[in-house]
Image (tube, rainbow, N blue to C red; front, side, top):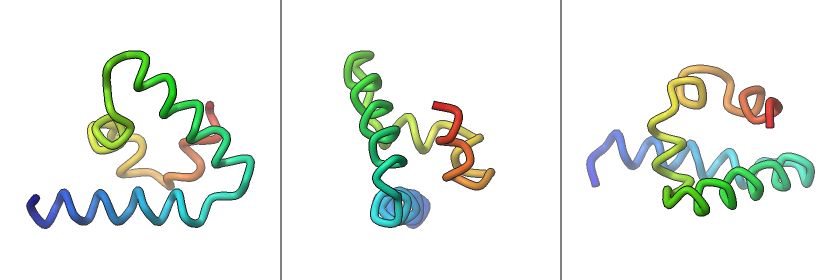
Length: 63
């Protein structure tokens, strides 16, 4: 795991740890959908410019 991967994983951890109950429900649904598509939540997270470059919590409000 390189430094960029560690940074992305830390951002994702902070997103989850600081999420409200409502946000956690949205994250859980997104995670469930990514699993149904054969993807991992982490890979969807790091491959999404909107989640990395924009305020993360605002991006999740779309779901």
